[in-house]
Image (tube, rainbow, N blue to C red):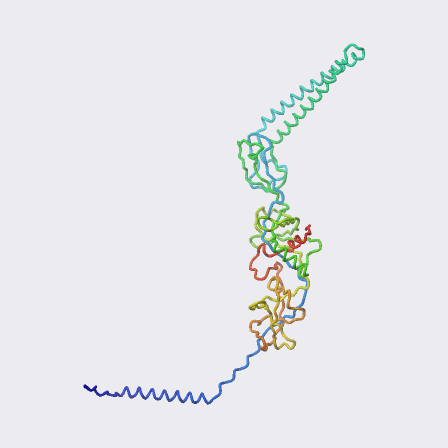
Length: 428
């Protein structure tokens, strides 16, 4: 057996062993000291600073908003009434035209010739009538003298009446020719915005399908159309039944229009039509408002937003949105006790948003004190410190009632007009 060489302990090894020993002793001493002392007591949590709103109930007017589209209150087709060639277009396409203004001129010459022919036939029949009257005047005395038979008298009377009828028919031909001649000058029956010409000079037009020449759309007044779904009608009808929503007694809703750039159209209008039936394609029904538009700012086909005014929420309770918290199953707020030193959780039912506030339909009553600022730091049973009174944010002049969670505008925002329509009451 071969023996291993003796291990040599160097000075570095001795220093390492000494360092480990000293460190271990220090750790043991630290553990002993810490085991002999009690853990420090947890400091008490400082009260959460909060502001408080005292709940009150008030009648609150609400506004509803829809996506809408403008429509001409009267749009007419300008058509040819007689056959012929189109000579001239006498208006600027797209311009505002006035009632009675000439838009197109057809070739008049064939119709002038037809009128001249009809007048000639009328003169011929009038001459014939003159002859028959003279013959009858000569025959009557001869019959009294028995110089001619009664048959000759009957023939003379019949010829006179036949000539009178022929004159009437010829007069009708003249009137028809005059009317056809007048149709060659094509005018607009109303004042409105003209469309482009469907036919150009030299085209042959007829009164049928090919006779469409252009459109004229009346701008003043103008219609604004929007649609309501069945769900909206049922929801607002239910709120009206429960007394949570009140409509004007005469259902006279006022409508304001907001343009695409956010500007407000200066004139307001009224709802003047509610479609009595739902659309089979969309499940909605049409609501129409009429607005004055003397300056022609609104044009047919524009997409706008329609705001409906007139509804009120009686005895409504509003709280700031930041005071309402979302729990696992419901919304809740923190109520301050009488001493103002502690808060308890209160489950609430929320309705629509109103600016920066929230309608509360159940869970609160007048006089309750609700934590507003600092609500996120409040916990059950922990102390609070009321640092001031909070107030409702004043709604902007264009504050819209929106369903909770809504982030934009649209047909789904609901309508007082829709609820009134669902109740079977016609608007003005």
